[in-house]
View 1 (cartoon, rainbow, N blue to C red):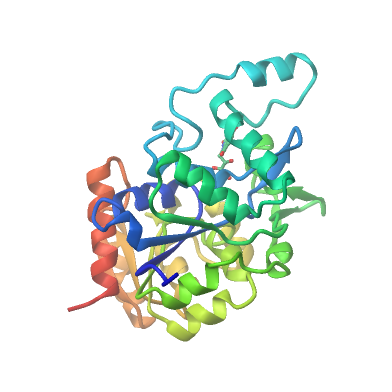
View 2 (view 1 turned 90 degrees about the horizontal axis):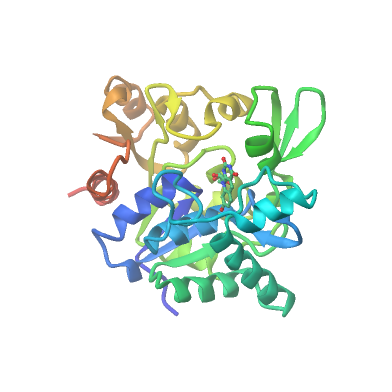
Length: 313
Ligand code: FO1
């Protein structure tokens, strides 16, 4: 099958909102999305893939609009019952969401690969963009805490509330994994490469750890990224606690320095217009836009701006 014209690297909520804008300015069939699986883990024996599901639910119009993750109109009867029976309930798995994890786990146990199951789920949800897990192999991101303990990413983020006691991020599982079928082909064959506004360390950084991915992007050096940092703060999530672990400043300039060898351009927020010149001095084209995606019209404009930056006249 020929590669789709646009390939995007994606994490969770920020990426999903951006991609929902993108599929309103280009045909969804033109898009392949390579999604981080470093956040995936098992709960109650069920395989949960938060970033894949966040992107899938958002593109299907099924996401909880306030949280940005989980399903719209969700209930929590199963989780509440599990809690009463003594099960862990810190990770809010809703009843409708659980149906997806049950089906995914069943298909994986039948021998289907994660990319195949993802395609089946996307078809069932009517998602026409191609969602590719970055890998079908184990790829769990671990957070190394200052006391030396290593915590699974969801335990760090959700159970423990993302404290600032992070010493390092361990992406070695991703580095030992093989890209899922179709990932390298999508990245090689796309005429436009986008890096969604996702955490540069634990979402995009995890995908870049996969053997061959960073090298491919460096060889092309034509990707366009969207900064997830506005005015020195992440829109959502723990990027401000994790960027310093890789020696990066928590700013659009810090993101630009991380992406400079991969990207031709970076879209930054209006609040960061003053950083345009230093980012251009790194050799990147810059576009200043509203990047806080309060509604779909902002997401559409942002996606359009990223596409224009990728293909300058
Ligand atoms: N994030 C939370 O902050 N609390 C939760 O209880 C929670 C549950 C959850 C369940 C399914 C799912 O797909 C995502 C969920 N998330 C939750 C979001 C998730 O932890 C993160 O947003 C991503 O892993 C980071 O991209």
